[in-house]
Image (cartoon, rainbow over all chains, first blue to last red; front, top):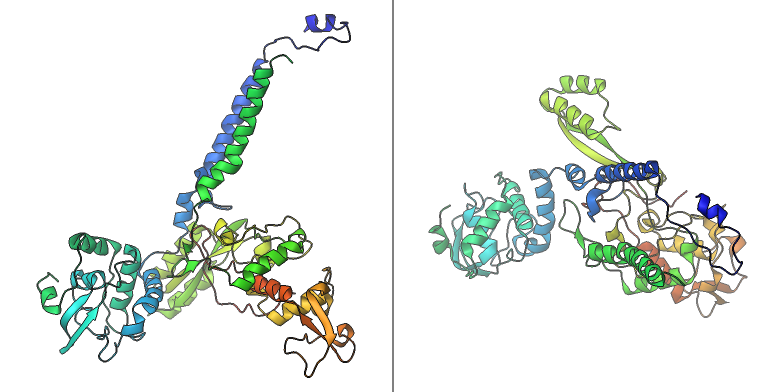
Length: 201
Length: 270
């Protein structure tokens, strides 16, 4: 320091210079402490750069815990919307089907089966040929309407169908749909009712 | 200059770091954003605007609406509310219990414990998540704004000054096209103490022809044109109104959850 003050009277055209001197230890430690506290605050409130975490939410985990309960009620509400835009045109909003177009889903033994394997295969592969529903034989085609839906959405629709119109059956999970997709593999072909009866329930 | 290279390198690193932070990182995070799913429904959000509303965004921009209006709802917290949906087989026990419990303004833990207590005596309850904050209590929106709200805005009209109310959810709150037209032509005709300047150049005052135009504004007498004349909106005014009506930030999303409640949103803002 004293060197600098002494060297002050220099020619006015000389470029000013700063000499090297050590940073005081306390400034160094204070910087480290502030940096540490900053990171602790970021860890608690920053959401770790997750683009889904905003404002009052501190982390993705916290946000997850605030999502509406994903239980059957939520799946049914979601399934209803998907049903109305994908299935309802033929099977009807009331699930009663349409003559010569689509069999009923309300009270159908295919829907009310104990297992969900056959039911899950129908929207994934479609139907070709005859199928017997509530002791009436239908001879028609159904496209693989559910093949393009994500697992969770298809599971929600099937849950809605199984729990509505007095069917009173349980939930279909995304894992059920995933398993059916895996069983079908890369080469889905529409089945008839008889073919499907060979599959375990 | 001494140390020219070090100065250049230091400046390059400083500018490069801020470019990475302000341009690169957001582009990586949100540059490929697409429509997202609305919570608990098969709908996607947001929906693409109609042609008129898309043009209306440019009218909004050209007239500097963003100088006095923001499009960003802020949220400072969340509260939970426990709502009874069914009394079950033992209604007396449920109602006795409920009278002793606090059911609104709860934290998540308090809501869960109230939920457990009521379920234990046979009642059926729902837990509602309610965003809180000054903007939300003013009725400007139901939840905070998130990136998905601006997916189809180009350029985004965030705004930074609120001489007028926030408009992020204006289409839900003020959903009447003729109200908007009156308000643009003569703000004080519908909001008495409005500080908004009139936008009369978006309208045409013309002589009534064979019959009055169906588009003519139904103005109160103190703002009405002279007898024999009518005020009709130009296409820009209609586009701007279409844009304002398309502003909806009213669906629950993963990143901004809330429990929708049925409320009437038909009344214009006070």
